[in-house]
Image (tube, rainbow, N blue to C red; front, side, top):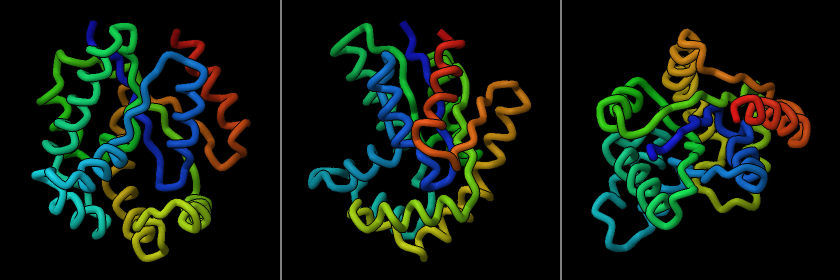
Length: 196
C-alpha cells in the first residue's frame, strides 16, 4: 500500500499542529510535521545536517528540499513498517515552495498519493498574535516578532503560490482558520468524512 498523503498548509500560527493533533485522535492518520522532523534532526548530536538546518531555521528560510523529503520518507516508511494499517499521513508545513513541490514530485512520484491539501486560511495579524502567545510557553526560537515577520513573508511569497497551484487542480480544501479550534475542527471533520 502506498502512503496516502494530505498536505496541511497555512501561515505560521494558523493552527496546523493543533488541528492535526485532533485529526490523529479521531481518524487513522499519522501526523508528520516537516518542521518538527527538522527540529528533531537539528537537535540530534550525530546529525550530519544539524548545523545546516539550524542556520536555515534561525533565518526563517526554507531548508533544502532533499533533507526534508528524506526525513518525511523515512518517517512514513518507519510508521508503515511498524503498523501496515497506518498508511494515511498528514504532512504539515510542506510543500512550502516550488522547490519543495518539484522535489516531492521527483522523489515521491509513484511512491505516495497526494489526496488533497488542507489549507488553514488565516489573516497575518491573527497568525502573529497566536505565535507570540505560543512563544511565551513553546520554547520555540522562531516564535518572536522578528522571525515571524520573515516567516510570514516567506509564506506569502513561497507557499501561497503552491496552494494556488493545487487550487487549479481542484485539490484544495480551504478552511477559515481564524475561528475557534472547535469551529475549525467541525469543518475538518466534514472534509475528512466526505473523503472516507
